[in-house]
Image (cartoon, rainbow, N blue to C red; front, top):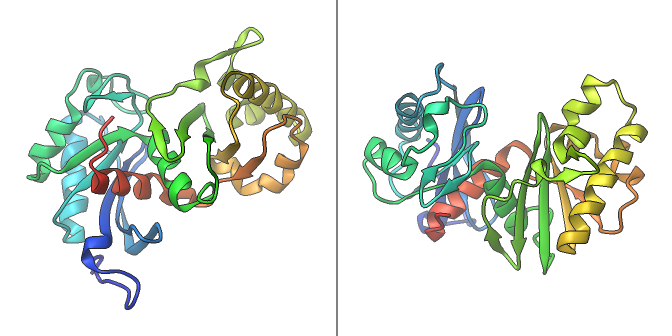
Length: 261
């Protein structure tokens, strides 16, 4: 079962459970919170269509039940989340806007120990504690390059929730309209051409925040050797390490520590 504990690695008090809600799939797993690694198999169910709050909540409950998990649960949403309430809706049904997501998942899961947070924030927490920034102090900025640009900002491990830097204007365009990986694909840009746009965006971000490290996430980070060396901004940029597990790991960590933006 998913809650089997690796010998000599953990005890049950070191485990958490995270669920990452995406536009195409809802994924969950038990997480070893000593190492940030998944324990047992990741469980994935296709995101219901339409992806209404009730339908997604039932899908999350199915995943938790299938894992045989009882205890705190963290859930990510592709949404700004404040006070447990979803304020935006990206790649999920617009009926999420204004929904008390924490109350919804609390009812569906039958536990009061639920944390709900933005998906990029969860990934940032995971990379900061267990991944690419685990040995970095100061300001860390995670950017996920995909259809748009997601962002997470942490200072010495403390999260500044719900940053939306992908929507920041950079020389007359939103950052994600310049440097999302979808822009590279849509305009058939070379890595050199695209890296020039990414650098322009990073310079704007670093002039405002003076970060100590950028972490590049999203699917295109798997080919980091083709474009990160081409960047010309001053702040070091490293690829994300936890890949598709980052949201699950960050959600589990948020639930275990009681973090709710």
